[in-house]
Every structure is written in C-alpha cells, then in structure tokens.
Image (tube, rainbow, N blue to C red; front, side):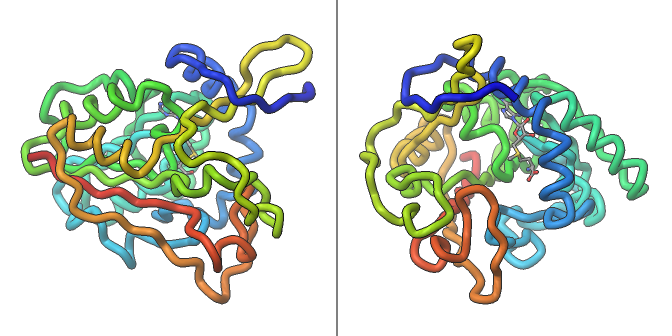
Amino acid sequence: MNSLRVLRVPVDENESRRANRRDWDRYADEYQSTHGEFLGDVGFVWGPEGLTEESTRVLGDVRDRDVLEVGSGAGQCSRWVVAQGGRGVGLDVSERQLQHARRIDAESGIPVPSVCATATALPFPDASFDVVFSSFGALQFVADGRTAVSEVARVLRPGGRFAFSVTHPTRWVFPDDPGEDGLVASQPYWDRTPYVEVNDDTDEVAYVEHHRTIGDWVELLSAAGMALIRFDEPEWPADHDRVWGGWSRTRGLITPGTAIFVAVLR
Ligand SMILES: C[S@@+](CC[C@H](N)C(=O)[O-])C[C@H]1O[C@@H](n2cnc3c(N)ncnc32)[C@H](O)[C@@H]1O
C-alpha cells in the first residue's frame, strides 16, 4: 500500500465516487474479515456501538414491504430485513463488497438482490420503495448530499420512511483517534471541507468523507419533502469494549459517535 497524506480540500461528486469505489474495492476483504463477525451475516447493526434494528425498530414493520438499502456492503442488514419477511434490495458502489454479499447469500441461504450503482443516481423507478435505509452506507461518502437525499425521496412512496446512520456530526471537531487524544476538540464543527486521503506517489485522491452538520441534514431532508420524526444518538453500552477505527469505549462513554436520522416522505 502506498503512503497517504491527509488533507482538508474540496472534492467534487465524480472524484469522491471514483476514489471511494476504488478504496472500498481495495478494503472490502479486510473490512469483512475484521467486522463481519460483529455485523453478523443476517444482522442489522446501526453502528460501532452495536445498536441493532431488532432492539430499536426505527424502520417500523418491514414485513411485506419493499425495502432499499443504500451503501449495502455485504448486505448483512438487508439479509436481516429479508429474514423478517421484507423484500430487501441492496445497492453499493463497490463491486468487491457486492461479491462478499453474494458469498454470504450462498452461505446463509438468504439471498438479497443487489445492484452496483451510486447513491446519487438510484436505478429504480419513482415511488418503488416503502422504506429506504443506510447504515453507515453512502451518505457520508457523497459530495452531493442534496442529490442523494432527493433520489431517496424520488424512489420512496408517499408516507415512506428513510432512516440512515452516519458518523455523529459532532465527531468532526475531534481527531479520528480512539484514545484520549480523540477527546480534544481541534476542528471547527461548521467547516464542511471534506476529509481527504491523497496517494503520495500519484497525487490521486484515494478516499473522501464529507461532513454535514445536524442542521444541514435537517435542511436536506426538508428540501426533499421529508419530515424528521426521530433522531437517535446511541449510547455506548457500559460492557462494550470493541474498537472500530476512531470508535472506542474511551470516547463512546463521553461523546456520541453515531447519529441516526429517521424521516418520512410527506
Ligand atoms: C462502512 S460501509 C457500510 C456497509 C454496511 N452497511 C455495513 O455495515 O457493513 C460503507 C459502504 O458504502 C458504500 N459506498 C460508498 N460510497 C457509495 C456511493 N456513492 N454509493 C453507494 N454506495 C457507496 C461502500 O462501498 C461501502 O460498502
């Protein structure tokens, strides 16, 4: 692996997609071997705190519903939806992540139809889903959040529900460090300039994450015709001691790491 440097510079939608697709194709094997057991082949986890959809139920009843997962990775969450009687469909920009989905489909005996596409151009007709969700999927990887959210609104049926988890926006002020240093605020909350990793040898953008404030998300949902009905900030369980990137017990007991937005299409 080439060495990388971290920058805060603007990156547009095309470059974000190209970089993140390549990075997820490269990282998929390691991601699944590191986190697959925690996620569960037929498991729905909303984030590193381990909060499950089984316990929190932000999607409502998915039985007999058409349910789209955006940024579905290996499809663990959608497989749980299918196991509950929902018609789950996955979508991801990384072909390698989707190959893992097909492997787990075969191993578990619970297949999830999935497509390789991007969150900003959903390849589905208008009003084709009752529920759209994303668990740390595409939303924080796209530059064009407005198009991604309006695409969700387009494919939802009236009254349909959209729920998604992202890194809690307040985490943006801290370094991405699971230790004590990750509790010292050093970055303005309102600075939306993305986090970017650049390949030192080629100067190519290798990875991008985009930050939006809580207010930005509320505005994007509202502009797309959706109303926020729930905003969850999962607490770190006292007995949970798993480190996932910058998420850890040290930080999690003090400050939220995950935000779950739940909205309905008016
Ligand atoms: C952190 S993983 C989460 C996947 C799954 N929910 C899980 O918990 O394993 C993020 C996923 O978003 C996908 N992704 C990134 N950018 C995307 C985009 N523009 N459109 C669709 N998927 C995207 C990645 O390929 C990756 O599979």
